[in-house]
Length: 511
Image (cartoon, rainbow, N blue to C red):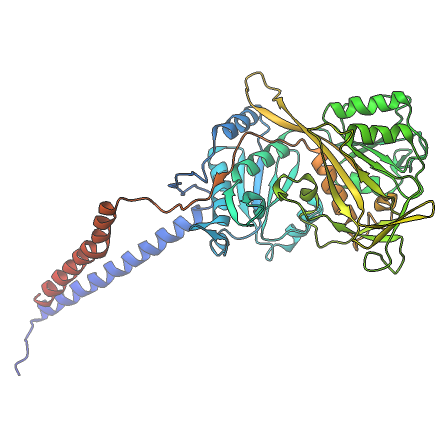
């Protein structure tokens, strides 16, 4: 067989062309890798997402733009949204509904807020790689953080959200039916960026437990509240008015009744969308004025000198009066339940309720728009004993009465309204807030109290932002268009690439 004889020049040209081909290939691969690295690095800081769904899941509506725009103009919109996981981890989820990766929607919506508002930033934190950060923020927010948490830290406050809070769940089928992300994020941003003094006042003059003495915190309850950022002070309603900065008024273990004038101050105080917490126990006497206020205005009350006991699993250390409270998880709609929102993140924590008194709720004297919910309760094997008469059953240990009204935003340029809340909580154990319970790492008493205090102490907003229904979000194409697109993608483009490849192959073969 004859061999092709090439001159030295031809050999050099062929080698040169081969070298250039290899060089071009290497440069092309390097460019692809570089572009991929650049896109990946800027994806978290520059919005590269386009919302093509009809529902516009990651789009921000006019209500949010108006209220947050007003904050931005006033200089108060300074917030960082911390997502407690790596950015790419939100892609690896089993929460897929109708083709939607729900955690990805949350992530992309957070980035959309940062893209549209200069005062908002998004940061991703891997809790495993930054345990110190996780510990500090866990202590700051009194929450055990996990990768499903999102922290909105504003100019004045911080709010901790869970991914589940962004989804609307059907109460009957327990399936995801909507995305509530815009409402959740806008509300959290408002709550964290609006300056409101965080003041808790304890009543005095009725034999209450001393909380503040000589400028120092004399009890674990006041100490924990102060450590969480609240300013704590005393108030004697018989001698002084309630400070306008007081968001929560606490009546802890009263032994003497309130006067008519003091009750009027309580009524005026709650009428301006403030909240009250009352702690009583099995030794609390009858206090007619205070009880009438609780029952007639708020539909909650207690039975003086009654004692609740449990002989079995509902008691600690086999002491029948040392109750282990149960969370009331039997709610139709957790998203709209104020009680459920208090304990949804701490349901694994035990609650100690020694020396509990029987509480009860009644609708007879409660305004129609008020709602009364059970937060904590006994098991169904408890006994309530009053003057030697015993009654068995399930009894509430903590009741929450709430009211909400739409009011105009305090801004002459705004036509939006917010839903302002009033709360009155009745706790059936004064030891719930005492040393050994409220400050013990073995119990969730402190976490539950702080959850209630933050809910009451930070202004809650309910804006007119509806959730977006999760339907089949596949792109809708007419059959003809779909067929033509399929032919182009599956036949034409591969054919063009194949022809070009063959041309290059044969041309080089004959060079």
